[in-house]
Each structure stands twice: as C-alpha cells, then as structure tokens.
Length: 94
Image (tube, rainbow, N blue to C red; front, side, top):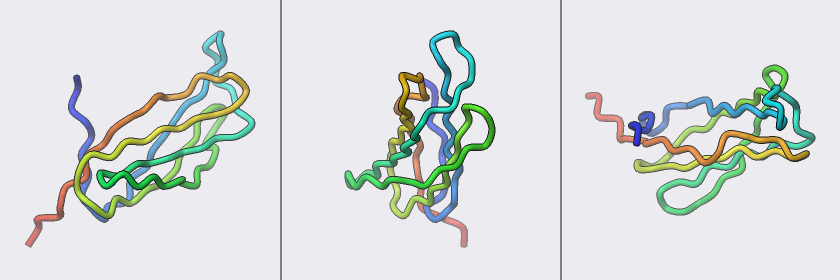
C-alpha cells in the first residue's frame, strides 16, 4: 500500500475528485458530495466546486492528528475517486 499523503494539523488542503462515465470520459454529475471523517469518527461534509468538466475540489483543514478518510461521490451512475486517506500530524516547528 502506498504511503498516505501527510499534512500538518491546521494546514488547509485541497481534495480533488474526478468523475467519468462508463466509457471513461470526464463527465459532470448532477450532485457532488465530499465527506471527511477524522480520527475521532466525526464526519464533515465539505463544500466543493467544479474546476473543469468532471473535476471537483474542496478544501479541508484538519484540526486533530491522525488518519483521515475522505470520499467524493456523485450522482447519475458516474465513477468517482473511491475512499482516500491522508494523515495529519502535529505542527512541531519551534
């Protein structure tokens, strides 16, 4: 399993998902929902916006250290990025 991306607690990060139809063409879903679950089990729905056809982004700022899981789902039978993970670590700069 590849290493998960690592960010510092309090650092704003960009989460990006792409949506394709069965033929593999980037396509816009009717609705996109981006959710992040933190290590405490709290799930947050994150506002997202279309960047280009089939590409959506949302920004999230982790407030606690540990493994975070996120998913971006769309409607209309489109395939989206599955569940992804990132790690938030404490800021140790003096």
